[in-house]
Image (cartoon, rainbow, N blue to C red):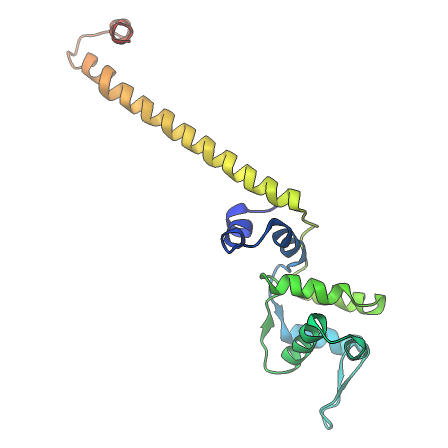
Length: 190
């Protein structure tokens, strides 16, 4: 379920378009990915094996990284590996734009690394179901329907207060008027 005020509006206010918002919501993890958890997943799967003496890294993720052309995906993967095996505490896979970057990096991984990517996603608390641009638009429209209804009800409540203050209270101020007499008085004023 998308919460417009929490999930969409802050990004919308920052100028992010609906397509990128949908991609973020579909890609984000429930929580930031703790680097300690990521290291465990990467090491146990053999995706990244670190030689503590030589300080070198090997494994299927390193092989994948080495085969990438220069560009964003390679830079992001390099940062991810260095951050997780360095002094990083967490990767904000639950926040924009890191969530979208994460999806970009993992989408290009082969089937053997998709299993590792899924384990990393689970370590970050999992992801919600796919989110489309239509879902983002529906959350916005749903929010504005609720706001319009609240404003409508506030207007009606104000009208009730005005009627009571302008017509009913003065008609009752004599202390003897009946409901029928108040109705008749209100009708005569209309």
